Image (cartoon, rainbow, N blue to C red; front, side, top):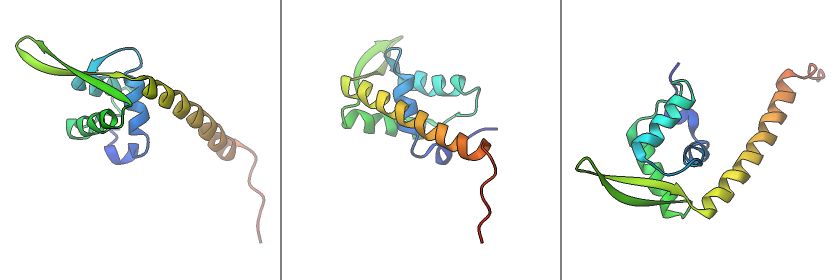
Length: 114
């Protein structure tokens, strides 16, 4: 099942930051890292990924630099210190949220109301 950008709303930033954690990547490589890392579930259009990368750059969570590879200009992005801090905080928040939801969904039945 393919997921669209709407399904990731609110989570796209942290996923993009995580895709850059291991080092700089150009935009298409970020898109492919999300697709491959999710076994194809998050196959996002470039029209979703690039504007999000530009927004993250404009708020200082990533930085970009231009290079020329094979005669083509490419912009590679990397996490800034602020981006690393944000990723760590978002990961902690996600773990707490996921644990809480798991407890609610897999725990004992909810008490009857009425």
